[in-house]
Amino acid sequence: MNVLDPVPPASTASVAALAARPGDLRGLRIGLLDNSKPNADALLGRVAELLAQRAGAGAIRRWVKPGSSIPAADHDAIAAGADVVLTGSAD
Image 1: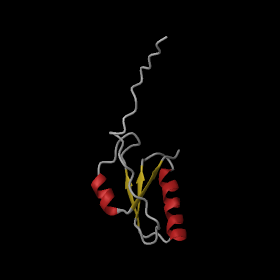
Image 2 (image 1 turned 45 degrees about the horizontal axis):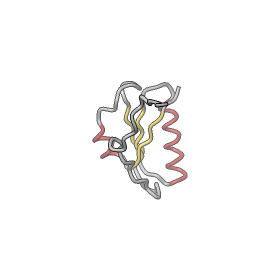
Image 3 (image 1 turned 90 degrees about the vertical axis):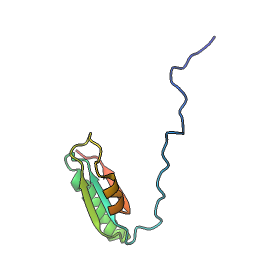
Image 4 (image 1 turned 90 degrees about the horizontal axis):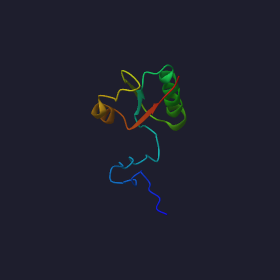
């Protein structure tokens, strides 16, 4: 019996490598990428505040996408303006 699988094998060629994780957040700039869903700003803002208080992270900067299904337009500005970036979804 021949069993055919219509799903091609996964290719690792298209998988991007993850960025290196910092060992410590002390003094690092936190970027927040808000996807414009209800309460995303509150969720991300509170997490960033806690990171600043508990881990000594530095300045917090926010970027807002025009909608949750639309990609962020200013990737270079986000990368240049923050050492770590938080994004998430909330309703």
